[in-house]
Every structure is written in C-alpha cells, then in structure tokens.
Image (cartoon, rainbow, N blue to C red; front, top):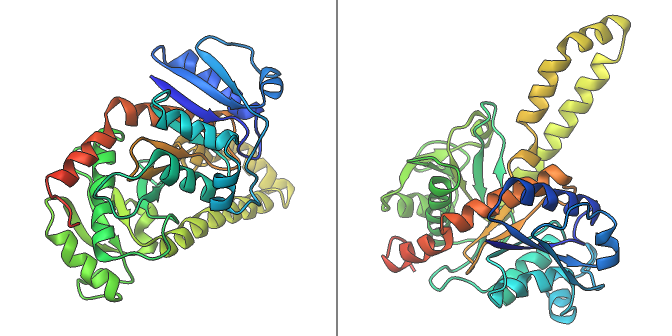
Length: 331
C-alpha cells in the first residue's frame, strides 16, 4: 500500500510529518510512504528510510493562499504533487495538514469526484465522553446543501463507520434545533424525509448539546452549520482545559489536589485529544484524501496514516461507488 503525504503542510512541518511517517512504517509492514517536499529539510529528520521515499519540490501552498488559484498556479506545490501521485496511480491515497481549502480543491481537480456524488463532504471524527467518537459531515466542503446531499453524506458516513470504525449498524442523526420530526428549516425538514427513505439506521433529529454524549455515530448537516459546530467544540474544549488549569493552580490546596488528580486528568485529555482520531476525510472523491489538523504532531500524523490505511484496505471508495450505482441515494 502506498500513501503520499504533503511533508510541507501544517504548523510543524516537516519535522512532525516525517516523525509520524516513520512511526507509521515501523508499525505497518505493508506500508510505503512518499513524502512530498523539500528533500534537504525532510532529510534532517529521517532517522529511518525503510519504505519511505521523497519526491522533491520546493514549492508550497501557504495558509494565506487563495485555495483554487493556488492549486491551479502552483502545479509543483507539495500538496498538489501528493494529489497527483494518487491521480497517476503512484499512490493509493494522500494526506496533508496544509491549507484546507486548497486540499479540497486539489481533491476535486486532481483526484476527481465520484460520478453520482453531487458534492464531496469533509468529515472529521470528533471525541465523545465515552471515547467512541462520532463522524460529523459536512464541516466546510460546501457551505450550502440540498436534502439529497445530506442523504449522500449519510450513506458515505455509514459505509466509512462500518468499514473503518468497525460499527456494524451506525446510527445516523440529522443535526437540528429539536428532535421532533417537523422541527427545523426547509433543508432539515426535507432531509428528514430523504433519510427516512433509506435503509440506513436513521435515528432522527439530534441536537448539538447531545453530540458529545454519543447520541449518534454519524451526524449529517450542511457545511456552514457543521463548521461552526466543529469550531465551537474545539474552542470550548480548549477553554475548559485552560479554566481547569487556572483553577487547579490557584492555591496550595488546589495544587495538591491537582497532583492527586493528574492521572485522571491525563486520561481525560487523551479521551478528548483529536490526534487519536486521525484526520478529516474528504468523502466523495475517487480515492481517499485526508486532511490532518493544521497543528498536527507526529502522533496525529500517525493516526491519519492509520485511518487512511484502513480506508484503502477496506476499499471504502469502491463501496461508495457501488452504493451510488445501486441507487441507494437520490441523484
């Protein structure tokens, strides 16, 4: 199995990208990784070159670049070349922690969209209190959506959850402002009817306040709403940990309590750590394209590789294509 990784994308590139790749090939004997980027900078951290190759380029897409324009003009950028490796059949999938919009553009223009899928969806797995996690899609690939798009998201999310996350019958929830069937705007009302028509395990409307309780395994919404939910969850988690740290460091007594609670707090942090869940998959493309978090460390890159490997091994893209062909979604 071959995976191409944009070694220059992300806040801690290329060091953490390289270290994560090394850990991945040491863990999975069937894996070959191509690191795409500046060879001189990459080799500084290459303590192990077993089943890792380098595709050299010095051009990089920056976080400040306009996504579509950058992909079209920077043909030799590390992110674009990683996607091109997939399009040319030199890699089975690609990963980047770089510019999210640019990766989505590279996925669409270079890797290509599955015929019959109207719009791709960006879908991260987010933590839950019980540690199981849930898949949220879309979180920003498309700000607007139609009911049939949400139905397609549900189908793709269900297949992924079955094959990669090992959930035999994923519960599909429609994000809404209430659990009643008639709640919501025109989009959610019509989407509810579309989802009821499928053979998916649709559990109905779910509210944002219940997401971290694990109310569903797959939650579908439009990209505008999904992106706000994602950033609200991330921001709240960071704020809570800062507030907790401040409270525990406020006095001698609380510092003693913090020392006693340290193992429990560490376990809590690991449960809510995005790096253990991999990256956000861009569903609806002809091959797996994974967006790792911009601040990814080596562990997060390793998790993204693990996630990508599972998608390739379980042939998730082919299963999605088959589902479309069998008219399990409305086109």
